[in-house]
Length: 119
Image 1 (tube, rainbow, N blue to C red):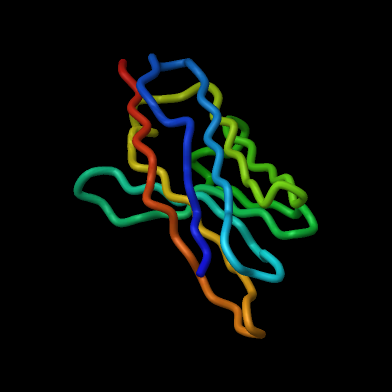
Image 2: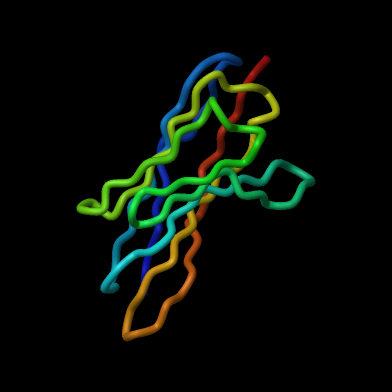
């Protein structure tokens, strides 16, 4: 089993910054794509950004130029640096990862961390 634990959420004023972290632990042989999703109240969960094990990235249009996803493969950790935050970035942010164990690739979710941006 694989556990994903997020940290770094909180309350910040518009224009501020936060850095989210997500650590993967448990029994696995490798981790593939790692991603951040978010879900605002009353909306569907949406992809914010993802990063491959080789470092290639993709961002939602709404966060391009403001958010940066990165990962440390040695620490099984993915980060999301969020700058120039806007009230519309308020949401629960979830970590997501593909991990291989027992020759099977499975997808895992973290519990989520709340990000609130005040105007």
